[in-house]
Image: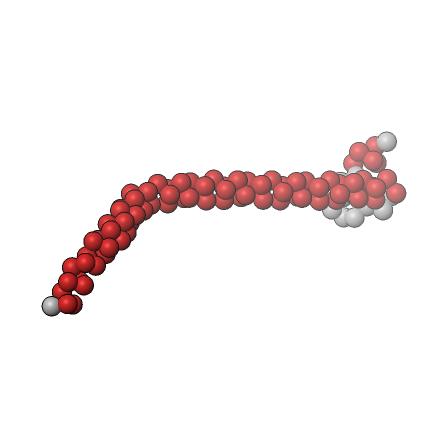
Length: 94
């Protein structure tokens, strides 16, 4: 009999915890789709931005290399020692 009284006395304490836990879980379930969607948008935006920056760096690096090769070819033409692939028509006409 004493166990029953103890159990009945503990029910209000347990129910408060259970209600609080259920309410918190309900709030988490409701806000979860919003959190996931906003995280997904941030991830896509960041990834696209990073991809654009990486592509820009690659293009600048290629441009720098082409410019370097062109200057070297012009220097060889000016010195009279062109490689077979160099186009020294302008230097020969001067």
